[in-house]
Length: 343
Image 1 (cartoon, helix red, strand yellow):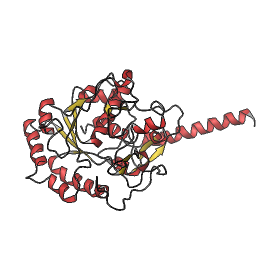
Image 2: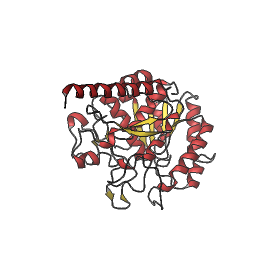
Image 3: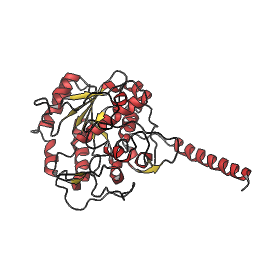
Image 4: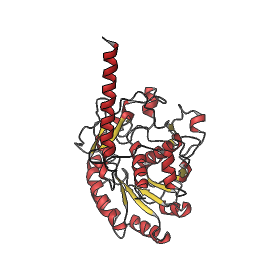
C-alpha cells in the first residue's frame, strides 16, 4: 500500500474527528439536569489515563502507602479528602482493579464517557473545580454508595492537583438517624463542619415505597433535620439530593454498557426493583426544601461496571460500582453545577 495514501487517510480521519468535536462544542452547556438524555460513548484514545487510583480500606492488600497513605478512613464519624493521597473507599470498589491487575491501567469500563444528546458537559478540570468552589466546604451524607461518590470526587481532585480535596467531607448515615460512632446524626456533623453545600441520598437502605414517602413527612426525622439545618445556617447552605447510582439484576461478565434498564424479580437486600420509583418520588418531594438535584440516572445504563463479587447473604454485588468508572460522572456534574452557578 502506498505510504502517501495511508497518510492521506490519517489526515481525513483527523479532520472528521475535529469536525465532530466542533459540533459537540457548538452545543450549549447542560443546565438543570438536561444531561440525563444521552448515552455512554466509548473512547478509544490510546492516551486516555485512569482518573484516579483506587485505594481500598477493606483489604489494603494492593495499597501503596506512597499513593494511598496509612489512614483508615472508615473510622465512623466523617472523613475528608487529601491533596497528598487518594481517598480510601470500600464497598468492593477496588476489587475490580485488584482482580484484573489494573490498578494503574485503564479498563474498558473507564473508557465510556456520558454524552448528552442535546447539550454538552464540561471536560473534568480539577483545578477549575477548586477555583469555582473557593473556600467553601462540601459534605456528602449517605451510606456506601455515597461513600463511593465522595471518595471518587476527592480522588479525582487529588489526581488533577486541584488543591481543594480537603474541603470535601463524607459522613455515614444509613437512615438519617445515627452514624457509626454512636450518637451523631448527619445534621450534627454538619453543625460541626459548617459546610456550604450538603449532598444527601437515601442509598439502598430505605427499602419500600412507603418508607421513601415517609422520609419527607412532617413527623419524620429527615424533615426535621433539614429544617433545623436551614434555620441554623439561615438558609445560606445549599442542599442537594443525589439520585440512586443504579443497581442491576444481571451485572455479570456479559453485561454491556447502554443496555436498557430492567429489573425482574425482587432484591431482598436493596430492593433494586423499586429504584426508579424511589428516584421519581425523591425528586418530587425534595422540591419543597429548595434542593438541587444531582441526577445520576445515566448509571441505569451501566450494568457492566459492578464488582460482581459473590457475597455471603445476597450473591453477586450488582449494587456498588467498580472505581474508577461511571461514578466519575458525579465529579463532572458537580463541576458543571459550580460552573453554571447552580451551587
